[in-house]
View 1 (cartoon, rainbow, N blue to C red):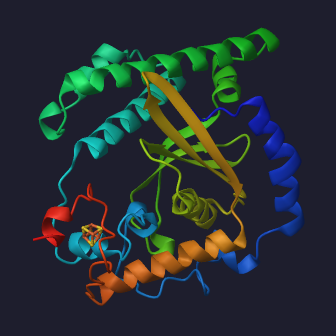
View 2: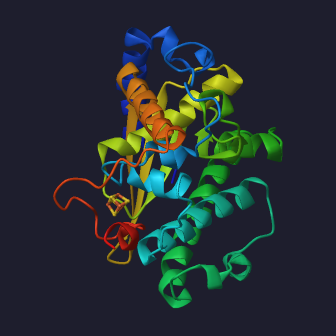
Length: 295
Ligand code: SF4
């Protein structure tokens, strides 16, 4: 899922990295400058999760108001449920492989609390199994490839080279006004790429905000630059896995856009200001809060 293809590697090496080195990032937009404007959060008492800052699913941000001011819960629909399950498959399978845990798909399924998921297991199992098997195959191939080229490397070192990912790495976003309990989908520590996984979604410009936000958080905590981000789109189409990547330079424009969104959402919560519904009928029909806003 997070492995780059040959073409993506060429794009990274010959296009993105040279641009990132030549253009650079303005010092005030590096996460480690969280204590000065514009990164310094204006409202110190508000801490938001990353999804609340980055989602533009609701055009006005009313979902943030309903959730964090009115404390209302959205209704989880099948699309969201499937997304959560497949997201879990990717992270649990990769973590199990990296940590050499004795976990297979059947034992993983037994851990799922199906009563909390509004989907029938028989609708979710086949795509989940497909994703699990795909990941195991690709990880084993990577590992075998590195093993054959490095006969003196330890198992730990082989794994670090073959699958160089921090999966669901826990990190605090508090310096930037976010929750202290964030989890990164994936950070490739050999190539310094911040990934974000989207399941069952068509690409949107604003999907770039989440990995950029995590890059800023990573910079704020670890003080290392993260210049390249990637959104991975995972879909099951005609019974086949389709994984597409949007690999990009986390430039000043995207960083400024993230700060703008963070400040707007924080203001909604701090000032308890209902931004209202979008004009016309711009609400997506499968919005989790549709039953509240249309009532
Ligand atoms: S129903 Fe519309 S206004 Fe309400 S949260 Fe969803 S998108 Fe926003």
